[in-house]
Image (cartoon, rainbow, N blue to C red; front, side, top):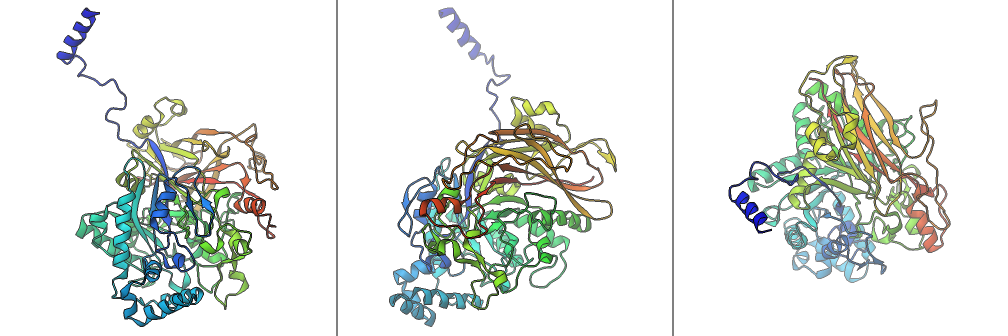
Length: 625
């Protein structure tokens, strides 16, 4: 033994092992973990939350997201099955913090007539009147508290609390807010997310819709922030299904000018990702745009804009839904040399209860008045069409709201910088509320054998690119119908440890042909069981184990894991294209079904008993050389 020790020490002393490293992880920097979070949560600091009953502030929101049990405003105890990894408290910048300041009697409020009127309403217990008075002032477009410094005070508090609860490696509290532009009641909202801590983010007061309802003005403000502070910031556009065709319009908001290359480049720079699913509906696809897609009609809220009086018409859908926008982006890139709609996809909640709940059996609703209860409001309160003059066509009830969604991020560590950087490079995906894991790599040199390699991830980054990236090739791909190389993809999907099995994995492809027309195709690339694609090109349904009476299901169908190597069978080297993966779970009970069991209430007509939760990955893009 002594001789062995002596030899070992001698070897070490002369650096015998210096030529190589034993650990395969030395020097690795690629993302190797998936983190789940919410980029869109409102607390009592948002006027449309605090003024309608929410009494929970940011600290309760952080504690809940970190896994603690809290008591909701309505008295129920609430707790997540598993903590979130990150959270953005995105309170509205318009009159930020006003409900809290009003409740505490902020002295500046009594220096103008609006503040005095609001204080009188609250003192008399006339909260509905107070909210209506604020809302009328808000819709005028003129800030009723301008010059009082209330937003700056609230922002100082919010940035301080974000730094307090940020725990690198355990829980990330990203600083952010919501810019709530809604011209004519049409949703153009964006969440503004900072990479920085309070020392930089705290040097500004959030840009609001009182400053401008034009996204281009917001981008100017963001550019100015970065130039002056040395910080980094990005914006996340909300689901466009409530925009009456404004979210992905062909003209600019203010000047109504056709989109040009400069606009396309700036939008791509400042808005790298898109919120494709949340409580106010899922905006991936629409059956009128994708009639052959049997999964397109999922959790749709498609009859109206957010607060406008105009019904949504089918002519607006191409400028509202993500898949169609991605297709139109290819056309713009061919025409302008830049793509204004080249975005990754995430999900988040848009909860106004301070509780980030996207689980079907733990859904605390959109706003405090519709938190869990047996009251009719839980199902029947309106999401859209609340104005007195609203026609029946635009009235959409709360039972149509979704218990959704979640932002999934591939990163190396759970820190502000790593999470934000993943957003910026689009290495993210959306789920409609569950925590299924999805990984995708694309390239021109993968083979089927790469799917089963022990170094699957390292090899994926070495030979290809991850979701959200451009497909790269270092050799000619040929042209037309006879490409020399064809893109191939490696896909792995796994259910959440405590979740539902998987039904199938699909590849969604969109492309621009030589005549300038866009197309799409949905490929079934992996599925559970022994099902076979029929003559109609469809895969038979996986089945349904949901027991509506008991609000249960079982995993006797589906499979925990699906994986696939897929090569595009219709690739043409001279056609622009994008590819993204959709993973579908087996049917599980919808939140309304859980409510019916817990509270013993009847479901309104038309409410589905079950749903198939899903994930949407950020696309990969191919452009001809």
